[in-house]
Length: 96
Image (cartoon, rainbow, N blue to C red):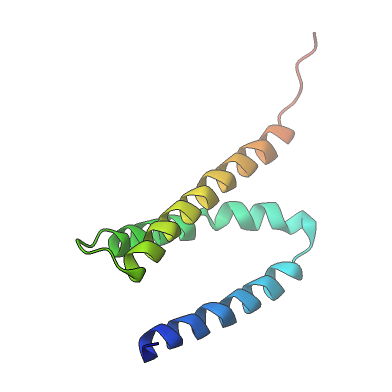
């Protein structure tokens, strides 16, 4: 295993633990607004993942970049759907 891959895996595992702990401490009333605000960050992650996945040769980095594109895109779409649902709650209901 190359040192670069080992360093990348260690950073990934540590970031996963830190991210889980940070999100776990957020109260549910703040989670939705924070999630909608993070869509821009996920959009940047999609662009970065596209750059990594777009290489000509297929290796482990390109494969991980491809999966990153899929997961980041799902995160962006899900964030927008949750934000739209949250905004629908604030609209007044029309009388029938």
